[in-house]
Image (tube, rainbow, N blue to C red; front, side):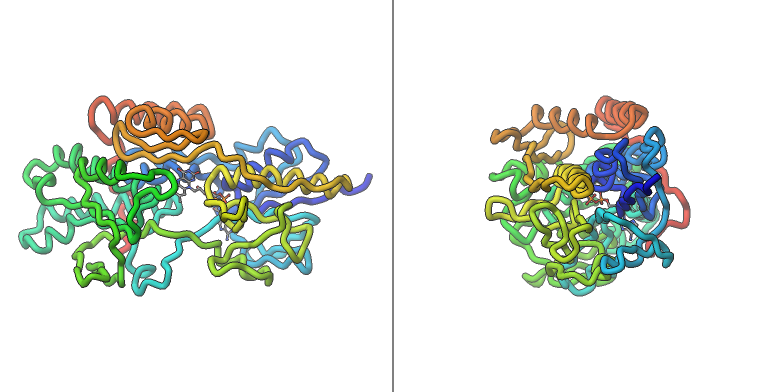
Length: 417
Ligand SMILES: Cc1cc2nc3c(=O)[nH]c(=O)nc-3n(C[C@H](O)[C@H](O)[C@H](O)COP(=O)(O)OP(=O)(O)OC[C@H]3O[C@@H](n4cnc5c(N)ncnc54)[C@H](O)[C@@H]3O)c2cc1C
């Protein structure tokens, strides 16, 4: 019997998983490789960092997700090199061969060359980082409760987030609500409402650029206690301070960098031309320009559509993953390949309790209705009934009692300091 073609998928995020689902039951052997043994639902990551959800609510083991598909297999390991000339990838240094490759390794944070940002800022790109951030914030408030020096206490209770896109806005809103509601009640002697500051710093003049086109988001965040700074550039970051371009210094033990993405550094090993942000400029079929059996999807592509680059979102990753999988099958069956065209199902972000901004089908929604749409869509896309039920229970509890379920500092040694 002839050997089935081997398709290797790098990454079990949105792009990789949706590609694998398309190839389930196809006449190919599929190997998915990821450094984690789970898929992460990144849109709810900020809620883990804001003590709103347990980490396991937004993750699912890859083996569980593929166990009913006989042609799908999984290997846990870090991709350390991609060698398309030899049709191999290195997994923890060991060579793995492929006939077709779908690269879906996602992105990492871009610091735009701001001195000290990478060394001193927290980032929010993985469950590990979200847990680290949650623990750090809870630990700072715990330490502030026993700090006699008011200046030191103020620095401990200042939380600065850089970047007014969806991640920065959602996190600022969730953090303000955590600090000014349940933690305010947990620390009656500290008076967090007066002492703690959540600052959101955005270089441009607009929050949620591309989703909101007015001042709704900024007004809403201000109302729940966030100090919104628009047109404010970060010049550099040092231990304990953020230096702004206008000369102001923000003294803080917590600087969070939520601005900008770039492709995972390992893709440079492929030896093909990449953009400045380490993304691939792929053909319309999502193939690499140099190697037709290598497809690239998700955050790793800079894809022009109607003269504009697509914003890298989960939807772009899912849809491109599916098209790449279909094109692999088309190549195998000597059929014409399909061009990728992103179908925009909408963009949205929450701004704390009862408020969101959503652009759906050319219509713009704000407020409670947008928030309900946001809740429904995120629950719908979250994988696994148990996770949906758990998330819904947490949300209902938070909503009804203004509480947060996960205010635990654990594990004990996870501090960055
Ligand atoms: C905090 C946050 C909030 C977001 N909110 C939204 C939202 O509300 N709506 C929306 O549409 N999009 C949102 N996004 C963007 C969206 O999550 C991404 O666009 C999407 O995940 C990209 O999919 P991907 O498959 O390219 O990468 P990912 O989903 O990131 O998957 C990449 C996979 O590759 C694995 N990997 C990486 N490097 C290696 C390596 N060297 N070896 C092995 N495995 C590796 C990772 O473990 C991961 O599983 C958010 C992103 C973040 C970080």
